[in-house]
Image (cartoon, rainbow over the protein chains, first blue to last red):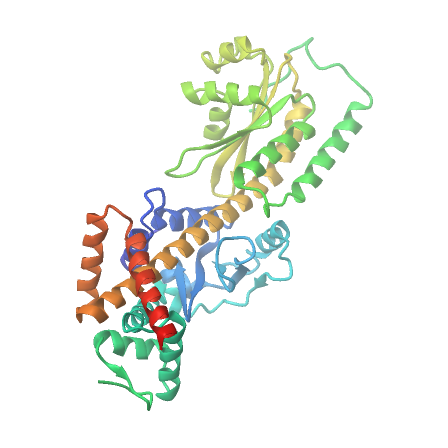
Length: 195
Length: 259
């Protein structure tokens, strides 16, 4: 698998955060990609999405093959892996029908026959490139940290960000971005981030 | 390549043998299709596949599976301890029916390992351990070979052409089951590690935010400070970050209670 520099850099960064010498996320992504291609020769790649707070982080190996996707298979991860509910893996392939057998087998193996979605994600969209959601996750968590540092409890900090986003008709990520650019900024009563 | 049986050493004819073998194969294939990885890890599942192979292939006393994974040690499982011992010899000296089956992508069969010219070092050692017959079957994908299944018997000439053929029939769904199990096992490993990394990243980012609010520094400066603390305390980054977050949260909660 030809891994893009951006994906490799993000995985390397997350591997540093994990700080476990036995785990290299780049290797794990590579191994899964190879195992999938061995099982489905017309396979193009896969994506794994994990929700962390309000941000969904996606790691995807599809890259330039996205335009050739004609079939997809989505499998929820929450019930059989150590991940948050709402996590999922999506496999992509180039030949229509190529994932039918894998869908049946994996659904049976995991007892998830009614939760497997075939061909529901054949247009991966802009998120197929590299990782997505990591920058949002970092900004939101850092903003929570800024508010906790000011004496808010985590729950109160989360509420403050959400209320500011609602009042200013923007996203929690946009409010967080503003706050970490100016950690002394006040999330004013009218909801608009300002000093 | 399937070897012809040695004259005079063909297994005795039994009128019910064909029917029994068909029943065994059917039962094993059926069991293979009901394999569930929900509560098994990859190694447990491979052991089950090896066990079903022993049930399916007439004359088999034990079976083992070898996976060839890129950049990783081979996963080797066995249905019985003697199989592990024999396979260890094979992989230790780099010669034997499994290696030949994987390299040549075809079935290997021998009924007299002690005098087998194809494996002059492996054969006699296996024979000394009382194992004289073998059928090795490559586990194939459309793109190549990803592993092999070794089926052993203590007696000489235990596997005839029919047994090898049954082995080949069994190896097709076994290869699919093993491949699917590998996809699941790799997905499980990646998902769990990614979740753990994201959790650690979230704590690190919160600690960065706390340091920023205290000193007005940039996220990069706060992260450098955190990294220096981690090195100084010889603790993981996420552990140091967790302490900073815990202390700040405790202070916030006590302040909240005081108000």
